Length: 310
Length: 313
Image: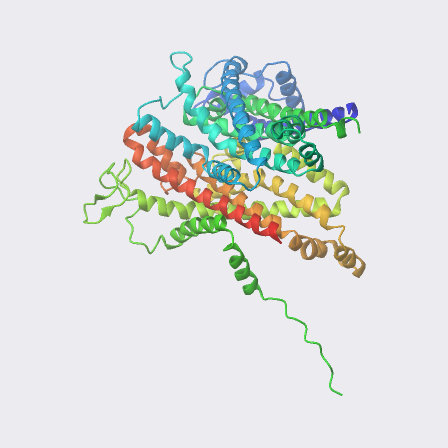
């Protein structure tokens, strides 16, 4: 188990190293382009060359890459061109906002998916099962920006119940969180539900469940005590793995509702050409994604005794 | 002596097999609903040039509600947007754009993914290590982040974009299209490769592969003729779902302003243009949202129907 964990950890670090190199290659291999971005399109060539000289850009490419990596690891992420502020100071509050949005969505989605998935999995083929399955296919088919559009049309323009932007201009407001959370939950719960349902349905047909039912244990107890423990292993790993996709959805929703999170920061930086912000945000996103894969793997091993003791 | 020949049953021709599959689909009501929705948009896209539509780019009376009369005596069935362009016409021309680029991008991503996956699965060894590592690297990006990085780092205004337009004389539209197809391929091919690799690992232990190896067939022949055609079942279902994701992506990139350049009608861009109008843009933004939702729903239901049928036999 420990050996496997270390192996995964090493491959994780290798992947991040490769990605950081690709990023650096895309955005900073052309150093004149960097100078132009930093000094603006109307700077003279002498100014750009001087800036390159003063900022150590005339060193060999690999040396520049290594010092950039060192800077990233030690928390020096450069200065944002758009906001003229340190990227690290800019990024943390945004990341916190995104964690708030993503965490709320994840908690609600998992709760709904577990309830619906179990209800539908213990009665495979019933009307309830079919209704839940159809509903989850339906909601998963509406892309986030489309459901956001429709929800805004209904709840903001027609019913005038909720605000249509979530920029938190006057501090935190719960009503501004409703629509972004709703959009993401609607899009994501279907997939989670289907995973839980499949796993639950499979466990319910297994021999030991039949034995437990035939022994006369009440059905509710069979489900809660015997079936759930085994049925939740697979959905757990899938849900953590899905964090990667959830993060993508979060970026879209943040842009749509002007929510000041990490995704909006990355999007604005991408449109502006704010390279140091793009680099930092991408690295953070990759770190989150890779760690979620690691957690998913480790969680699977811890939860599944066959692997834990094997 | 007359040679006695045994009449072997002719294998069904390609046409009969295709129609047989459609006939099977009729057994799945969900699949039929999906197929109908997809067919509707495909027909709309194909027939766009011959349908009696307004010019999708021509400005007229702005922000008309649905069913309002047009100055030339016809009707704006779904109203007009803020520049007075007919929404119905933009939706239908937009379906052509979305479906065309989504199909091209899915096709390219699938070809690349299948090639990589079958090589990783069949050749194994270093091929497998290298391809799997590459796939893991690309799959470690949250997909939206990958798109933002590729489209800003290598987009139309980058060196690559300038290279494409200067060297080959492509129009800005084609350059953006190529770059979007490349971005979709980077994001999608690793997933396809992973699925194909898994299927091939299973298929390559079959007797017919061993028979081909004994016959002395080349690795390329075995991969193309023996392995890939036999992996088609799950791949068709996956391709259907994947086409849905890619369609979402194309429309989403349009919404985010990273898609094809204006003024071509693009569902995502239609929403993005109507959003700043607030309440007055409601009519102009709900139609494209409904259009994309119905198309994706159609593709997902079709995939579900196909899966149901493929599991049956």
